[in-house]
Image 1: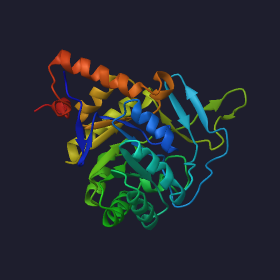
Image 2: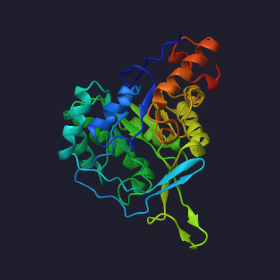
Image 3: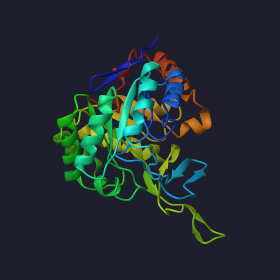
Image 4: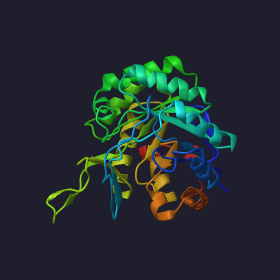
Length: 303
């Protein structure tokens, strides 16, 4: 039977599936449930320096092929989040801490404290499309991506993963900026900036107007971004965007990812989507003669 164990920037995973930030990760209890349901790792809710209420409702709209959200990164702040991380870690979960800030100094301070809680790595949310001042501007400035990544690298001892936005002309150039800043890996992609309109009311559905689109609708975009990044940088890539089945995950691996994140698919396939995806991956790999995850990474690029 194929082996699903993999490694991302020195972080060893029992399988290549991770819980994407923003789904079932506000509490230690929910993260532990996801771990027990089969995820190789769980990424926390994006946590900032202070508590944040998020945007006003309506903040969610579900399409047939995806989810549009503008929740605005509600979170309790880094000081209050230690209890949640500790609970998940004590239960055996592999936890990666997601952090954000308004500038390099805030990112570094929050990341340093998150790392002190015992997380295996820190993921930098550099690309939220629906929280003003907390991602949109940073996501479109490669110098900011480099500066923030470098600032965090100076203060933490754990691997640093820079999460990149698809809402740019050349995402690979942002991956290169992250590499210059010392990133150990990159995550691609965050949600795609989008809107939904209610024709009868003649107005946008979301109070924030703009939101981030996730789910199957964005899988081709995510695959393209991972493919382009793999061609340009030599650090591990975590692929995310529209992964529902084991076949979806394998496509991301072939594009160049070493692991994948799953979020929106929980709505349709349940919390055991991670175990289902892993079983489907194993079956496909056994049927096609692949013994381990590493054998799949980047094969779509040819020799």
